Image (cartoon, rainbow over all chains, first blue to last red; front, side, top):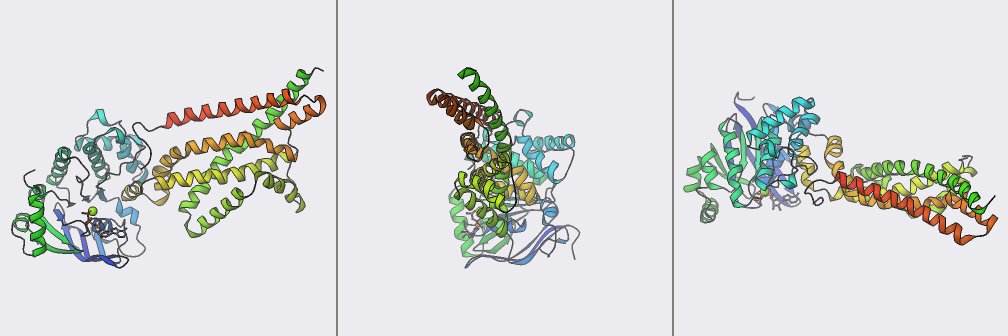
Length: 254
Length: 219
Ligand SMILES: Nc1ncnc2c1ncn2[C@@H]1O[C@H](COP(=O)(O)OP(=O)(O)OP(=O)(O)O)[C@@H](O)[C@H]1O
Ligand SMILES: [Mg+2]
């Protein structure tokens, strides 16, 4: 069933909240090492899509496959697969009561059940990969800047050694001068071969990292393809309007 | 025997009993309060209904009435508890119902994002509650729990009515012998005051030690 390089496959995913159909049959697949970027206006269903993939929101219909295993099949132990999907939230969601390194270690000791010293080594490694230096390891989230928090959150996901990373607008909650350091880290990870799905409004960043760009609108993927083609010469009117707005807001070149 | 000599003997025996009563009821009511509070939030339909009913009952009865039921009421159906244990049971039941309210409110104040992040790491429900939610919720609940403990110290005196020889009982006995209510009740008021002051100092210290640097409270 599964192609050798395929990490994630989403087939005909549907979700409604009450009357509103938020996902109207989404399908795509992500190969190993591939970087997919999803863009689209507020309310398009981007967050819902990512949360459905991680089964943080149960989809109504459709199937999700991670490395050949169907996560949506009944009776599956969701937790076991969820740890293989790294999720980075817009609001960071660091555990307030733990230090930076404590945040990264928790999943390692409790979920992966590694001994403390081994967990600590892996956590240190992950933190260094996102450029969080030793001086910040024992700081609590409230003592970190937004950019530092988000990088710790990335390290926390990374340390679980996921097969794929999902980023939900990772820089939208940050001051503009702090987005760069976070985007840089995500880009480095992508370049090192980390399979990723990234929801973002940063056009310049999308152009740089995306292997494929998908435009979501009203619960559907209305356009997909090579990022610069999709951005500079979109076919659908909705996408044209969307990019006209985004580009005018000056997203390019950051 | 002199008044003060007699008082000292009786008061120290009474104080010892009160401290025994508190050393049992405080920890058990906290533990039970946490369990009930967790059940109210995470117990599912049945669990939360049961836990809510528990709170409805024991927060709805006056402690004095619960105490009477534990001692005289249970005796009617053949369960004989010694006064000390009947009083302990009543205080634990009543107090844990109040404690659970603080715990529940604290759990509900923890942002949804914390739970999402825990689950995204692959934690099961138990791990999420034990390692992410409760460590934060208990910090938030601590001032309320402390407050309830101060009340417990004070209403432990109700145990007098079912015949526990605690501080208040020793004062009543003293007064029936010596009839010097001003000195007697003034003195035990100071004993209670010193116990509540000690407890609030100790719990303030615990709160300070557990405070998360830079964190202003759960959002
Ligand atoms: N838990 C929920 N209950 C009800 N409606 C919801 C829920 N979550 C999302 N929605 C609705 O679903 C739609 C899509 O929301 P979603 O958060 O997925 O959009 P988005 O594309 O991520 O937008 P944004 O760019 O603002 O983050 C919105 O109309 C939203 O109001
Ligand atoms: Mg969103």
